[in-house]
Image (cartoon, rainbow, N blue to C red):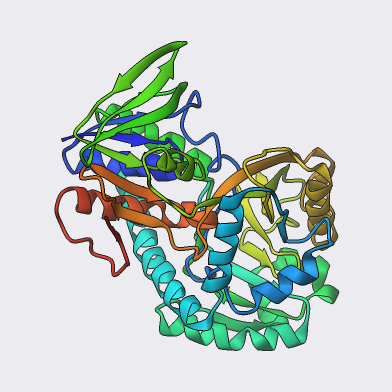
Length: 417
């Protein structure tokens, strides 16, 4: 079949690759001049399978209330006169119920374990280089009571197949000596040795090049303006390329436009509860190799993630639910710089930090939409939130199976139309 993939981020590009490997003719459409230039461009860099609890959990509503008046809050809800935002928020609160959180956690972990294995296989077969490290993730704690509270979630993750251990301060410093400068602030950590990190943008560009060499056609700088649907089928996608209107037609279509999937889906009656969560990151040149971390980190107190990308440090975090606006709040970026510099002052040239913001496509449950729609030839691979990089390869492999009429290898609640 000829398949059109809408979106050339990490999810869309991996989808194109796996569809092509399954024998389909594939065209990818994206408004950017090359792959991986939006949410995949400067994210946190973690393949975080074992530290992937849903944002929607029983503890979150109380935290949001405490954070309402904090300009640097890790999760910030900015109310708008937007019915989609409020419907999303109400659905999010429902997903905070304990039984929903448990169900969602199982989906996220199952997909994550499968996806990480697919990534490792793909990396080895294509010899991809994207500044990846396989030294695990340390989740740091500054409060002893919160460290003790981490024991139960760690036990639950082990039950789900993730080796997540609670470790003391000395073991943490043994794993990552660069944290010695922050010793007085830290009490311990949880550690997942099997998790990874890497540059999602470099990966996406490298895979796009391999996909193009394998016959995938990429239509860059092409705006998607609408979908034509009739009698339960998608007839084509309306686009603008080089100032000219056109319609692209294929046998099947995959919606992988991140936060914009909801907007495009509404034009044909698909209600996808995906809302943009604006996140921030900084990228900093390494100043001292000895003082810079190489184990990926999660800073529990500030809800930040740290990844080492070759001679660069990437620190990302925070989320704003404020529609599709992309304004860069420099105060939030400076807060990231301040926190990172206080932990590891000699690690990077903090005064040379590059700031970035992107829109994560967040579902109320944190579980992405993968699979069929009510339209016979339209498929979904979207809504991955902050785990698009973690889930990209597994989502794409599973969707290629679905398109080909095969049962995916992973136990996951796929969309069924």
